[in-house]
Image 1 (cartoon, one colour):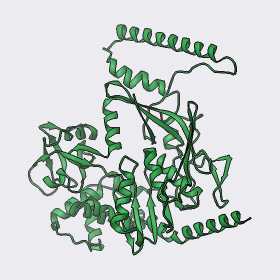
Image 2 (cartoon, one colour):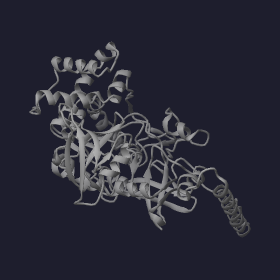
Image 3 (cartoon, one colour):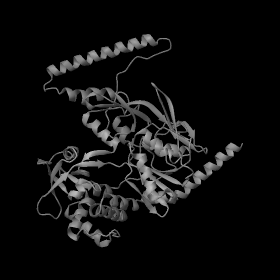
Image 4 (tube, helix red, strand yellow):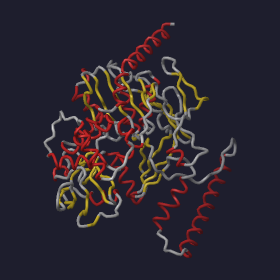
Length: 525
């Protein structure tokens, strides 16, 4: 078996394990023997139950399904919400995510009209080169009808060995007939740091979507390309970042801290305590940093946020993070399967455990029910003496709550902006200028399109969010007319949360300056 440390908060996880005996002082040998007997007895019981089911069940039993989808997940479900078993398909996807590469056509897809729709081809991908566009509805892949197939099933059809061809037929807005595309599969990079650009002179924006094997190198590449010597302030966006590899989270935090400062530590029942410190440090680059987080920022992204907060190196802005303080070691098993087993808990530099309580709640509530759950008994201090708490995630220094209204959720759920952009460019041509800004006539066309598509909305809510609506129209038009990178940039430039994060850069500088003064005063006593 091969093992790798892994920090991740999957959205849907099956979880648990057999209970063993308690080991007390002076009775280790007896308890160990008793525990072994209990395990053997439990395995015999399971084997007998399986035999009875196999012989007497009304329908034929699939052994792989019973084991991979039933027995093992059921066992893990008694442990914690993050221990997880990966069948061959899931294990392959996890490894692709870690490596940051797979073989296929390279596009983001979604579900519409019981089929799969192209959300956006990746930049310079085989799909983009073949001419597929956002809004294209996939009708067949290699002759197989996509009607009723899940998006992951269609994605599997699109993947394949490098150099092979995926033939796709699609329905496009404004086209009379189906269109056929012969897409030659290739290696598709999955960058974990898709965005790094100037929001305004001296203010750099950096987005980390997850932590894979290439994250720290991608971060360095963005700083090198833009010139870190020109950075006067950094917006580090960790929203929706579910986590990833421990060593990559440490490497990212390392480059913003001073050499020798603690990044994180972890310890567990069968693993010795280990502490990780910044090995290279920031080499005196002390520009202010605002880290933007939300309720879905988890695990390795919380390690980075917690380290920068505890050392007063950055101002944390947004919502309270998810609260995952458990470490999974990934064991590669036979038959291309894997086990992500919780083996330790991790602690921020101030020694707080930010794991949410899961002892008296369902897994559904654990993952989806949010709220302040900080542990008032776990009170710690940052380097400058500010109070921080364990339990319930990382509490931001400045809060910014986001919640979609009915009109926002409805327009996104119905793919209103995606479909409007495809129709708009079909009518007006694809020669869109990068200076384009939606005006009243564009909004009027959008309203007419909503009426045609029978998408209802509350007028007062619509008017209240007109700037947001214009921003989403511009974003989707840029994705369709240019590429997904230009669309994301347009989205970020219009993001109110990012605008307010920029406004908080002076607070971030004041926070770090005050911390440095207090540390000097403390050392001088």
